[in-house]
Image (cartoon, rainbow, N blue to C red; front, top):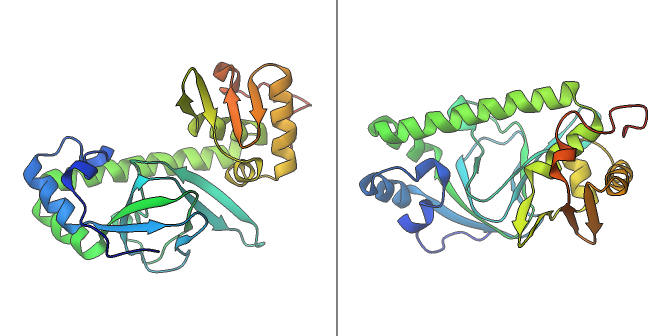
Length: 234
C-alpha cells in the first residue's frame, strides 16, 4: 500500500456518485478529510474480522470483496467499480469488517476515516443525506445478494456478474474478467464457468477471447437463465 500521497482534490471527488450534487463548500471539507491510498493488483486492503477503518471510495480500478465460509472456501461477494464505495461498516455501526477487500487491478482509493465520518456527518446535513443514500444502497445490495445466493442457479449468478461487470468498448460491450475471477464472484469453480460460457457461445450470446468476454446478445443473459433446465450449470 502506498499512502501519504498528494491531497485529494475537489475535481476528483466529483467523479464519485455520492458527492456529485453537493455544493463546493461541502466538497472542500470532504476532500480535506479524505486520504489517498494506492494498491497493487492482488494486494489486500483490509481483512475480515479487523476493526473498520472508515468508508472507502474507488477512484480508479476495481476492488474485490471476498469472504471465507466455515469450510474454508473463499467466495467473492462482489466487485466494486470506479466511483463506488465499500467498507460501509461505520454506517451500520459494526465493530469488525464482515469481509475482506482485495485490489483486483491497480487501484486508487479515497478513505474517509471513521472519526472524520462521524464528525462531518454530525455537522453537515447534506453529507448526512449522502451517507444515508449509501446506507440504502448497501441494504439493497445485501438484499439482492441474499436473493442470488438463495434462489438463483449457478448459471443465473454467472449471467448476473457478466451483466454487472460489462463495460462499453467501442461498438461492443465486454467483460474483462478471467474465468477464475468470474467463478469466485459466482460462488462456483472455474470449470463450471468455462462450460457455461461455452453454452452461451454456442447460442450466440457471448464470444470468449483470452481475458475478455464480449456480450453479443445481452438480452439472453437476463433472468431467468436460458440454461435453467436439465442442462443448467451445476
